[in-house]
Length: 452
Ligand code: HEM
Ligand code: HEM
Ligand SMILES: [Fe+2]
Image (cartoon, rainbow, N blue to C red; front, side):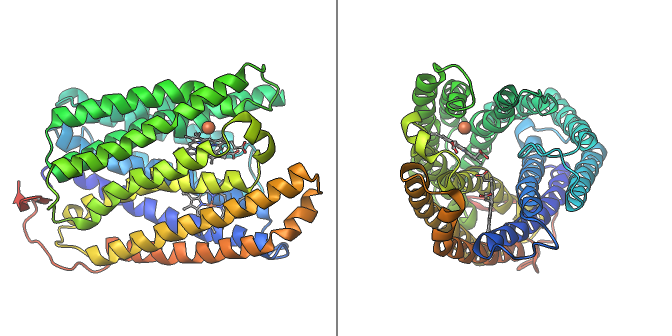
């Protein structure tokens, strides 16, 4: 590590991975209910498993983004983190808020608005923690060097906080409620989080390929422009059937189709830079994640998103397993993988160990990624059958569910494989160190271990 305060990232990564493991457990429980509907009914209802699964996802991704920001900010800004104490404090607040929400859910305490189920006071704590985080990192940036990477990253994080405020606005009219609900849910993942993803990707690419910063920055601006241009009006693809005016149908069709562009550009960006630059970085596992992330994101968000985004297709597929298939691969490719990529890059220097459990990390990558793809395929096939039986032939919902058992069992199997891959990865991150580096100022570079 070049800067002492980069180590602040480590506890964020530890908490994030613990919550990721918990998320997978709740995912496995809810998938078991799909396969055997009576499973645990008297102990924990399905909706509680599901809300725990999805909320843990959001909470750990946010904590992961914070960890990534604390790790890269000192290097990019060439300045130590303004206040490590504030960083630890806001992590504690965030982790407490997340844990309180999770425990509350087990007792049925929630506000019932998908993804935003947290009780009011938990939302307030999350806001306080996030603001502390933003001020801490912005103060660091203000004192240091401004690069396209840290500026775009901070822009994405601030905009994420601004759109989060709509989580507090809960109109009683259901149509209006949905209208603003998407301002958080859609504008996060298909708008401002893309800025976070692109800047983290840019950081990894710079570090690994050694390509000139000016080149990387140009790509970054193009990606940011495309993401905001398509993603904002792309919200229209959620306004087809909620009582919004009908002009949202052509707007949603056109702009959400354009949403493929930033994801495709990120693939071209990563591969072109590796092709042009150095490919001999010693952290091969980090290279794998850096190329894998935009690729899977392109398929999950771009291809699987486009599959059901045109309103005359969505008319049939809306809210079926096709949606769940897309939701899983998109979240995994774009946001899970970018965080795991930065972690894979950062862990050797955070733990002062080289060359690091790279082979096990790569096994984790391949097992988890193939299993997520397999899960997506089974849900897609299940979703197509469901769409046909339910929306074309008009069969009753529960009758159709009876026909989908095989797909749900295969999804559960895929989930078990995801969990195995995740366990390998967590062991690679936190298990015994392969080789200890006594010196505190070490980072892997393409030229080999570098001392700061
Ligand atoms: C990384 C980016 C993305 C993530 C994480 C993501 C995630 C999700 C999730 C979780 C849902 C389900 C929401 C719910 O509970 O109803 C959803 C719905 C949807 N997504 Fe995405 N998405 C992404 C990008 C895209 C893109 C680029 C497109 C279009 C090309 C797209 C098209 C859609 C559509 C049309 C729906 C609504 C499905 C329905 O009507 O049931 N998504 N997305
Ligand atoms: C062990 C692996 C996993 C299993 C077995 C699993 C299973 C499930 C199940 C059964 C649901 C409820 C679906 C429904 O109500 O129809 C669900 C929802 C969801 N899961 Fe997972 N999951 C797993 C991993 C993940 C991962 C790694 C992510 C993030 C990348 C994720 C993101 C989501 C999202 C966003 C939803 C809401 C989807 C929607 O609204 O369409 N899950 N998951
Ligand atoms: Fe969307």
